Image (cartoon, rainbow, N blue to C red; front, side, top):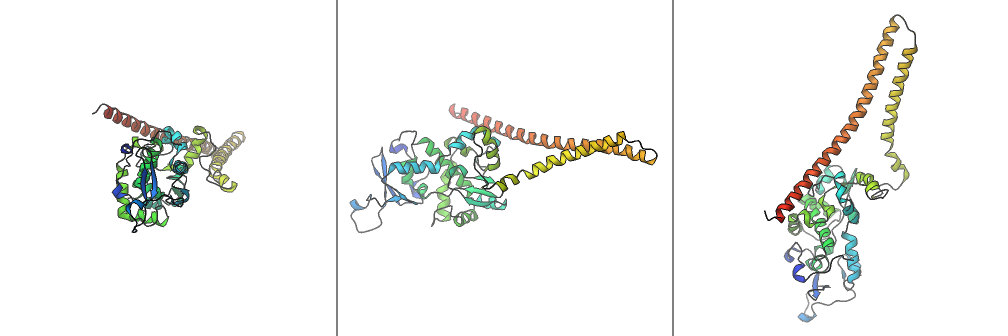
Length: 346
């Protein structure tokens, strides 16, 4: 359950105003210290005292099996939908996986331009994780669009509030144009009935949120799944972060290219060495002696080229890793300096 105790109602303020909420089906009830939720009654001729009724049929928006009267079920569901514990643990090393920039998120239309098709993923750990020709995006739960729900179940719980802010801030970058919103609607990533203008006004407040207000996972943007799977073996103690292949065939097929390259290198080297030995041991005269001498130099040149290419690829990999480490170090120093200045009131 939530790690931090609930705060007073005055401290439970969502980052957006109630006027821009996109789901107004919930209203607050209970005491200021322990607010509860109820369904907003439809416009009827009932007296004001009967405008709010909590019944067993009232359920969490988008979740017909979770009753509004069960705060325990709601809390468990919200944690499951928002918390990214594995990626938060991975956060100190995520610079190995992605650019250390929370705004490094390709909008939905750019994801398609880059040849990636959008895959709906309800697991928050997979949100904005991409691999090859696909990118995983978590749909926005309808209850996250309610101001009352934020007050009752999200605000005042530090870990959960940071996760929620980071998640919706990522949507601020995912939807930058109307075409992005259209793609989101087509893929059912936003609740039915939402309009572009209202949706952008809702997200506007999340665009002003800073990194120290969100979960560590959201200090980064798009994450590369292949690197998560590779480094996860050493940093998370898991064989894979997410199992990309369901069958052995596609899993082993990805090794064919590297193995063929290694076998090709060794084949060229051994063939060159074999030719060199044959020339050295052979006794040739006349015009064949010129050919034998040329063969020696070709063997040496072949070995030099192969070794040079192999060293170049190894050095290129090291250079890219050092560049990413340098960028991560500079960014970390800049953020620490900014925090010190803020603490000192500069």
